[in-house]
Length: 237
Image (cartoon, rainbow, N blue to C red; front, side, top):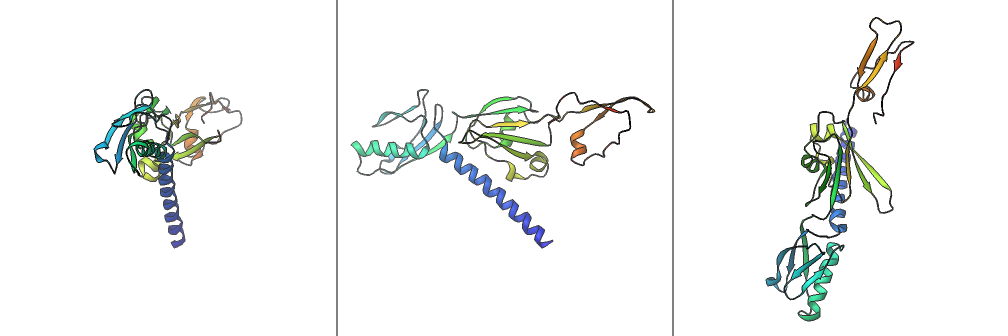
């Protein structure tokens, strides 16, 4: 019992570390673009502290510096660029910090069993549940498992499986991972299939069977007889 409890605690800690790591990587690697809202702080010149929105051409307008192009740059790179520009004309050493208050230039897609599938902007730190909520929530045909499809740096598309029962019904917030730009959240439709039974049976006809529930052990398996016909109209996966 103690060993099982220790393994459970280790698993929870690992999931928490994964979610935090995902968030840290997202903030560090995020590329700033049009409509993002930035909070800029210059420690040596507090009068330059302000909140600005990136324009459609990918630049921001700042006192003393004028228009500064920053589209496609990470937060750290913007901080270094602004500090360098200030040091060229006004300060010997400048300390600049940039905090991204709204992430509006990046989007993610939601497909499958949600009220309003489509593309949605990632504003701030957006998790899978927040995005599903924006998409109108889950429909009654949603599967018990969802997938986050994410493109890695090497071009390979990774798939992160998330147990919706554990996340929603059990409240396991460790599974509510933050999303990244261009992620696709796929909630498969849990669809009933038909099994047509003919031959020497008492009541020939069509039986509706939820194959996924049988596979997961939630419903008893059905014993088929000689002459039965199993008809699967389309892939259930």
